[in-house]
Image (cartoon, rainbow, N blue to C red):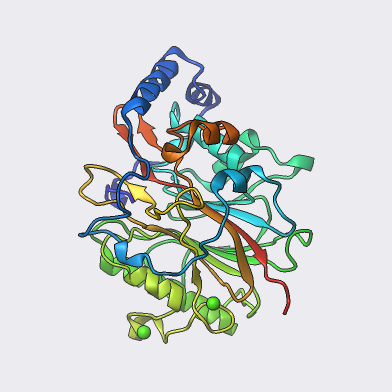
Length: 377
Ligand SMILES: [Ca+2]
Ligand SMILES: [Ca+2]
Protein backbone atom coordinates (compact mmCIF):
# COMPACT_ATOMS: atom_id res chain seq x y z
CA UNK A 1 0.00 0.00 0.00
CA UNK A 2 1.24 3.43 -0.75
CA UNK A 3 -1.21 6.24 -0.45
CA UNK A 4 0.63 8.93 -2.35
CA UNK A 5 0.60 9.04 -6.13
CA UNK A 6 3.66 7.50 -7.74
CA UNK A 7 4.82 10.86 -9.07
CA UNK A 8 4.69 12.32 -5.58
CA UNK A 9 7.38 10.08 -4.21
CA UNK A 10 10.44 11.66 -2.82
CA UNK A 11 13.65 11.37 -4.69
CA UNK A 12 15.90 8.55 -3.58
CA UNK A 13 17.74 9.51 -0.45
CA UNK A 14 21.28 8.67 0.42
CA UNK A 15 21.76 7.56 3.97
CA UNK A 16 25.13 8.42 5.45
CA UNK A 17 27.08 6.60 8.10
CA UNK A 18 26.12 9.30 10.57
CA UNK A 19 22.49 8.82 9.66
CA UNK A 20 22.85 5.14 10.36
CA UNK A 21 24.26 5.90 13.80
CA UNK A 22 21.24 8.13 14.35
CA UNK A 23 18.94 5.36 13.24
CA UNK A 24 20.60 2.92 15.60
CA UNK A 25 19.41 4.99 18.53
CA UNK A 26 22.81 6.40 19.45
CA UNK A 27 21.66 10.00 19.77
CA UNK A 28 19.46 11.69 22.39
CA UNK A 29 16.77 12.39 19.80
CA UNK A 30 16.72 8.79 18.63
CA UNK A 31 16.58 7.53 22.18
CA UNK A 32 13.64 9.86 22.85
CA UNK A 33 11.82 8.49 19.80
CA UNK A 34 12.40 4.93 20.97
CA UNK A 35 11.10 5.76 24.42
CA UNK A 36 7.99 7.19 22.80
CA UNK A 37 7.49 3.95 20.92
CA UNK A 38 7.81 1.95 24.11
CA UNK A 39 5.11 4.14 25.67
CA UNK A 40 2.93 3.58 22.62
CA UNK A 41 3.38 -0.15 22.94
CA UNK A 42 1.50 -0.03 26.23
CA UNK A 43 -1.68 0.97 24.43
CA UNK A 44 -1.08 -0.44 20.98
CA UNK A 45 -3.42 -3.26 20.14
CA UNK A 46 -2.76 -4.71 16.75
CA UNK A 47 -2.84 -8.35 17.67
CA UNK A 48 -5.31 -11.05 16.73
CA UNK A 49 -8.16 -9.24 18.35
CA UNK A 50 -10.53 -8.82 15.45
CA UNK A 51 -11.76 -10.64 12.40
CA UNK A 52 -9.50 -11.11 9.44
CA UNK A 53 -11.30 -8.41 7.58
CA UNK A 54 -14.68 -6.80 7.56
CA UNK A 55 -16.96 -6.23 4.63
CA UNK A 56 -16.28 -3.43 2.21
CA UNK A 57 -13.10 -2.68 0.36
CA UNK A 58 -10.97 -5.50 1.65
CA UNK A 59 -9.64 -8.68 0.20
CA UNK A 60 -11.61 -10.95 2.48
CA UNK A 61 -12.69 -13.11 -0.43
CA UNK A 62 -9.06 -14.11 -1.07
CA UNK A 63 -9.25 -16.40 1.93
CA UNK A 64 -9.86 -19.58 0.02
CA UNK A 65 -9.19 -22.99 1.50
CA UNK A 66 -5.81 -23.10 -0.19
CA UNK A 67 -2.50 -22.99 1.56
CA UNK A 68 -0.83 -25.40 3.93
CA UNK A 69 -2.43 -25.45 7.37
CA UNK A 70 -0.13 -27.64 9.45
CA UNK A 71 2.99 -25.48 9.53
CA UNK A 72 5.06 -24.68 12.62
CA UNK A 73 4.63 -21.50 14.61
CA UNK A 74 7.01 -18.72 13.70
CA UNK A 75 9.10 -19.08 16.86
CA UNK A 76 9.79 -22.73 16.12
CA UNK A 77 10.26 -21.96 12.44
CA UNK A 78 12.87 -19.28 13.01
CA UNK A 79 14.72 -20.74 15.99
CA UNK A 80 15.03 -24.37 14.83
CA UNK A 81 17.85 -25.42 12.54
CA UNK A 82 16.72 -25.18 8.94
CA UNK A 83 16.34 -28.53 7.27
CA UNK A 84 18.47 -29.53 4.27
CA UNK A 85 17.47 -28.00 0.97
CA UNK A 86 15.28 -25.30 2.54
CA UNK A 87 15.45 -21.88 0.92
CA UNK A 88 13.97 -18.95 2.84
CA UNK A 89 12.35 -15.92 1.21
CA UNK A 90 10.94 -12.84 2.91
CA UNK A 91 8.51 -10.47 1.21
CA UNK A 92 8.13 -7.11 2.89
CA UNK A 93 6.81 -3.69 2.00
CA UNK A 94 9.10 -1.55 4.14
CA UNK A 95 6.95 1.61 3.70
CA UNK A 96 8.34 4.61 1.91
CA UNK A 97 11.98 3.52 1.85
CA UNK A 98 11.93 3.87 5.63
CA UNK A 99 14.64 1.38 6.47
CA UNK A 100 17.23 3.10 4.31
CA UNK A 101 16.47 6.71 5.24
CA UNK A 102 18.61 8.86 7.45
CA UNK A 103 17.65 8.74 11.10
CA UNK A 104 14.81 6.31 10.54
CA UNK A 105 13.55 4.48 13.62
CA UNK A 106 12.76 1.63 11.20
CA UNK A 107 16.41 0.78 10.63
CA UNK A 108 17.09 -0.96 13.97
CA UNK A 109 13.75 -2.74 13.68
CA UNK A 110 14.56 -4.05 10.23
CA UNK A 111 17.96 -5.19 11.43
CA UNK A 112 16.32 -7.20 14.21
CA UNK A 113 13.85 -8.65 11.72
CA UNK A 114 16.70 -9.60 9.40
CA UNK A 115 18.58 -11.26 12.25
CA UNK A 116 15.47 -13.27 13.15
CA UNK A 117 14.64 -14.23 9.56
CA UNK A 118 18.15 -14.94 8.26
CA UNK A 119 16.55 -15.18 4.82
CA UNK A 120 18.33 -16.10 1.61
CA UNK A 121 16.30 -13.64 -0.42
CA UNK A 122 14.53 -10.45 0.64
CA UNK A 123 11.87 -9.31 -1.82
CA UNK A 124 11.17 -5.74 -0.75
CA UNK A 125 8.67 -3.17 -1.91
CA UNK A 126 8.56 0.64 -1.55
CA UNK A 127 12.31 0.94 -1.88
CA UNK A 128 13.46 4.17 -3.50
CA UNK A 129 17.23 3.69 -3.09
CA UNK A 130 19.09 2.14 -5.98
CA UNK A 131 20.30 -1.48 -6.12
CA UNK A 132 23.98 -0.60 -5.60
CA UNK A 133 23.15 1.37 -2.47
CA UNK A 134 20.90 -1.35 -1.12
CA UNK A 135 23.44 -4.11 -1.79
CA UNK A 136 26.11 -2.06 -0.02
CA UNK A 137 23.75 -1.49 2.91
CA UNK A 138 23.15 -5.25 3.22
CA UNK A 139 26.88 -5.95 2.95
CA UNK A 140 27.50 -3.47 5.76
CA UNK A 141 24.72 -4.58 8.09
CA UNK A 142 24.42 -8.28 7.30
CA UNK A 143 27.79 -9.34 5.86
CA UNK A 144 27.87 -12.76 4.24
CA UNK A 145 30.56 -15.28 5.17
CA UNK A 146 33.62 -15.91 3.08
CA UNK A 147 33.67 -12.47 1.51
CA UNK A 148 30.48 -13.13 -0.45
CA UNK A 149 28.32 -10.13 -1.28
CA UNK A 150 24.61 -9.51 -1.62
CA UNK A 151 23.05 -9.02 -5.03
CA UNK A 152 20.29 -6.43 -5.41
CA UNK A 153 18.12 -5.89 -8.49
CA UNK A 154 15.24 -3.49 -8.81
CA UNK A 155 12.09 -2.84 -10.76
CA UNK A 156 10.22 0.36 -9.93
CA UNK A 157 9.77 0.34 -6.16
CA UNK A 158 10.55 -3.37 -5.87
CA UNK A 159 13.99 -4.51 -4.76
CA UNK A 160 15.08 -8.13 -4.68
CA UNK A 161 18.12 -8.72 -2.49
CA UNK A 162 19.69 -12.16 -2.72
CA UNK A 163 22.54 -14.08 -1.15
CA UNK A 164 22.78 -15.88 -4.45
CA UNK A 165 23.76 -14.46 -7.84
CA UNK A 166 21.09 -13.28 -10.25
CA UNK A 167 21.80 -14.61 -13.74
CA UNK A 168 19.02 -12.80 -15.61
CA UNK A 169 17.05 -9.80 -14.51
CA UNK A 170 14.62 -7.43 -16.13
CA UNK A 171 12.14 -4.91 -14.82
CA UNK A 172 9.58 -4.83 -17.62
CA UNK A 173 7.31 -7.40 -19.12
CA UNK A 174 6.84 -7.74 -22.90
CA UNK A 175 4.70 -5.90 -23.79
CA UNK A 176 5.39 -3.36 -21.05
CA UNK A 177 2.45 -2.82 -18.71
CA UNK A 178 3.81 0.57 -17.68
CA UNK A 179 4.57 -0.69 -14.17
CA UNK A 180 7.97 -2.04 -13.28
CA UNK A 181 8.39 -5.47 -11.73
CA UNK A 182 11.43 -7.47 -10.64
CA UNK A 183 11.75 -10.56 -12.83
CA UNK A 184 14.79 -12.46 -11.58
CA UNK A 185 16.48 -15.75 -12.36
CA UNK A 186 18.28 -16.61 -9.12
CA UNK A 187 21.21 -19.05 -9.21
CA UNK A 188 20.46 -21.18 -6.16
CA UNK A 189 23.65 -23.05 -5.17
CA UNK A 190 23.72 -26.79 -5.79
CA UNK A 191 24.27 -27.35 -2.08
CA UNK A 192 20.69 -26.15 -1.59
CA UNK A 193 18.68 -26.85 -4.73
CA UNK A 194 19.48 -28.72 -7.92
CA UNK A 195 17.99 -25.95 -10.04
CA UNK A 196 17.56 -22.16 -10.14
CA UNK A 197 14.55 -20.13 -9.01
CA UNK A 198 12.53 -17.65 -11.03
CA UNK A 199 11.25 -14.94 -8.72
CA UNK A 200 8.66 -12.30 -9.57
CA UNK A 201 8.64 -9.46 -7.03
CA UNK A 202 5.65 -7.17 -7.51
CA UNK A 203 4.25 -3.97 -6.13
CA UNK A 204 1.00 -3.50 -7.99
CA UNK A 205 -0.64 -0.09 -8.29
CA UNK A 206 -2.19 1.18 -5.11
CA UNK A 207 -5.63 2.19 -4.00
CA UNK A 208 -8.18 3.05 -6.69
CA UNK A 209 -6.09 1.60 -9.49
CA UNK A 210 -7.92 -1.70 -9.92
CA UNK A 211 -7.74 -1.56 -13.72
CA UNK A 212 -4.01 -0.93 -13.50
CA UNK A 213 -3.52 -3.82 -11.07
CA UNK A 214 -5.40 -6.15 -13.42
CA UNK A 215 -3.31 -5.02 -16.39
CA UNK A 216 -0.12 -5.56 -14.39
CA UNK A 217 -1.20 -9.06 -13.36
CA UNK A 218 -2.18 -9.86 -16.95
CA UNK A 219 1.23 -8.70 -18.14
CA UNK A 220 3.11 -10.89 -15.65
CA UNK A 221 1.13 -13.97 -16.68
CA UNK A 222 1.77 -13.11 -20.33
CA UNK A 223 5.50 -12.85 -19.61
CA UNK A 224 5.61 -16.19 -17.82
CA UNK A 225 3.63 -17.81 -20.66
CA UNK A 226 6.25 -16.62 -23.15
CA UNK A 227 9.13 -17.64 -20.88
CA UNK A 228 7.71 -21.12 -20.33
CA UNK A 229 7.26 -21.42 -24.11
CA UNK A 230 10.82 -20.30 -24.80
CA UNK A 231 9.90 -17.34 -27.00
CA UNK A 232 11.69 -14.85 -24.71
CA UNK A 233 14.90 -14.94 -22.68
CA UNK A 234 15.26 -16.61 -20.33
CA UNK A 235 13.38 -19.78 -21.10
CA UNK A 236 11.80 -21.30 -18.00
CA UNK A 237 11.87 -25.11 -18.17
CA UNK A 238 8.75 -26.84 -16.92
CA UNK A 239 10.52 -28.04 -13.79
CA UNK A 240 11.94 -24.60 -12.94
CA UNK A 241 10.49 -23.35 -9.65
CA UNK A 242 8.52 -20.13 -9.90
CA UNK A 243 7.57 -17.87 -7.01
CA UNK A 244 5.45 -14.74 -7.43
CA UNK A 245 5.11 -12.50 -4.43
CA UNK A 246 4.79 -8.98 -3.17
CA UNK A 247 2.39 -6.22 -2.33
CA UNK A 248 -0.58 -6.72 -4.64
CA UNK A 249 -2.61 -3.87 -3.09
CA UNK A 250 -5.79 -5.93 -3.36
CA UNK A 251 -8.23 -3.34 -2.13
CA UNK A 252 -10.52 -3.46 -5.14
CA UNK A 253 -11.15 -7.18 -5.49
CA UNK A 254 -9.19 -10.37 -5.99
CA UNK A 255 -9.04 -10.32 -9.78
CA UNK A 256 -5.29 -9.64 -10.03
CA UNK A 257 -4.49 -12.38 -7.50
CA UNK A 258 -6.77 -14.84 -9.29
CA UNK A 259 -5.06 -14.01 -12.57
CA UNK A 260 -1.55 -14.49 -11.19
CA UNK A 261 -2.46 -17.77 -9.51
CA UNK A 262 -4.48 -19.41 -12.28
CA UNK A 263 -3.10 -17.69 -15.38
CA UNK A 264 -6.56 -16.47 -16.41
CA UNK A 265 -5.72 -13.27 -18.28
CA UNK A 266 -8.54 -10.72 -18.23
CA UNK A 267 -7.64 -8.79 -21.38
CA UNK A 268 -6.49 -11.51 -23.75
CA UNK A 269 -6.59 -9.16 -26.74
CA UNK A 270 -3.78 -7.17 -25.16
CA UNK A 271 -1.83 -9.83 -23.24
CA UNK A 272 -2.50 -13.05 -25.08
CA UNK A 273 -4.14 -16.33 -24.15
CA UNK A 274 -4.57 -17.70 -20.66
CA UNK A 275 -1.67 -19.83 -19.42
CA UNK A 276 -1.42 -21.42 -15.98
CA UNK A 277 2.01 -20.35 -14.68
CA UNK A 278 3.08 -23.61 -13.05
CA UNK A 279 5.34 -25.69 -15.28
CA UNK A 280 2.91 -28.62 -15.29
CA UNK A 281 0.16 -26.45 -16.73
CA UNK A 282 -1.63 -25.92 -13.43
CA UNK A 283 -2.27 -22.98 -11.13
CA UNK A 284 0.22 -21.82 -8.51
CA UNK A 285 -0.27 -22.53 -4.84
CA UNK A 286 -1.52 -19.54 -2.84
CA UNK A 287 0.61 -20.02 0.26
CA UNK A 288 -1.49 -17.69 2.44
CA UNK A 289 0.93 -17.30 5.34
CA UNK A 290 -0.93 -17.21 8.64
CA UNK A 291 -0.16 -14.83 11.44
CA UNK A 292 2.92 -16.15 13.16
CA UNK A 293 2.71 -19.41 11.25
CA UNK A 294 -0.06 -21.13 13.15
CA UNK A 295 -2.50 -18.30 13.83
CA UNK A 296 -6.01 -17.84 12.50
CA UNK A 297 -5.52 -14.49 10.78
CA UNK A 298 -4.14 -13.92 7.32
CA UNK A 299 -4.40 -10.17 6.85
CA UNK A 300 -1.10 -8.60 5.89
CA UNK A 301 -1.88 -4.91 6.06
CA UNK A 302 -3.56 -2.73 8.62
CA UNK A 303 -3.71 1.02 8.94
CA UNK A 304 -6.48 2.13 11.21
CA UNK A 305 -7.98 5.39 10.03
CA UNK A 306 -6.64 5.01 6.51
CA UNK A 307 -10.07 4.48 4.94
CA UNK A 308 -9.19 0.87 4.04
CA UNK A 309 -9.96 -2.11 6.20
CA UNK A 310 -7.27 -4.61 7.14
CA UNK A 311 -6.77 -7.14 4.39
CA UNK A 312 -4.62 -9.85 2.87
CA UNK A 313 -3.03 -7.69 0.20
CA UNK A 314 0.48 -9.23 0.25
CA UNK A 315 0.75 -12.70 -1.25
CA UNK A 316 3.15 -15.54 -2.01
CA UNK A 317 2.36 -17.87 -4.91
CA UNK A 318 4.54 -20.92 -5.56
CA UNK A 319 4.80 -23.57 -8.28
CA UNK A 320 3.73 -26.50 -6.17
CA UNK A 321 4.43 -28.95 -9.00
CA UNK A 322 8.07 -28.81 -7.91
CA UNK A 323 8.08 -26.85 -4.63
CA UNK A 324 7.00 -27.87 -1.16
CA UNK A 325 6.16 -25.27 1.49
CA UNK A 326 7.74 -26.31 4.78
CA UNK A 327 7.17 -23.05 6.65
CA UNK A 328 5.21 -19.84 6.15
CA UNK A 329 4.22 -16.98 8.38
CA UNK A 330 3.01 -13.41 8.36
CA UNK A 331 5.09 -12.13 11.23
CA UNK A 332 3.01 -10.09 13.67
CA UNK A 333 5.20 -9.15 16.59
CA UNK A 334 2.31 -7.33 18.26
CA UNK A 335 0.60 -10.64 19.02
CA UNK A 336 3.66 -12.60 20.15
CA UNK A 337 4.20 -13.26 23.86
CA UNK A 338 7.18 -11.72 25.67
CA UNK A 339 8.74 -15.18 25.79
CA UNK A 340 8.36 -15.61 22.04
CA UNK A 341 9.70 -12.12 21.39
CA UNK A 342 12.72 -12.83 23.57
CA UNK A 343 13.38 -16.11 21.78
CA UNK A 344 13.34 -14.29 18.45
CA UNK A 345 15.28 -11.25 19.64
CA UNK A 346 12.44 -8.96 18.59
CA UNK A 347 10.53 -6.07 20.13
CA UNK A 348 6.74 -5.96 20.20
CA UNK A 349 6.50 -3.13 17.68
CA UNK A 350 9.15 -4.35 15.28
CA UNK A 351 6.62 -4.83 12.46
CA UNK A 352 5.16 -1.38 13.06
CA UNK A 353 6.14 1.72 11.17
CA UNK A 354 7.04 4.97 12.80
CA UNK A 355 8.28 7.90 10.84
CA UNK A 356 9.44 11.00 12.57
CA UNK A 357 6.58 13.48 12.61
CA UNK A 358 4.10 11.11 10.97
CA UNK A 359 2.95 9.02 13.92
CA UNK A 360 2.74 5.27 14.24
CA UNK A 361 0.95 2.73 12.03
CA UNK A 362 1.19 -0.99 11.47
CA UNK A 363 1.16 -0.96 7.64
CA UNK A 364 2.45 -4.22 6.09
CA UNK A 365 3.54 -7.36 7.87
CA UNK A 366 6.59 -9.22 6.55
CA UNK A 367 5.89 -12.64 5.05
CA UNK A 368 8.39 -15.46 5.39
CA UNK A 369 8.22 -18.68 3.42
CA UNK A 370 10.50 -21.74 3.51
CA UNK A 371 10.58 -23.81 0.33
CA UNK A 372 12.32 -26.94 -0.83
CA UNK A 373 12.29 -29.01 -3.99
CA UNK A 374 9.75 -31.82 -3.81
CA UNK A 375 11.23 -35.27 -3.66
CA UNK A 376 11.08 -37.09 -6.97
CA UNK A 377 8.19 -39.51 -7.17
CA1 LIG B 1 -8.99 -15.29 -19.68
CA1 LIG C 1 0.33 -26.15 -9.41
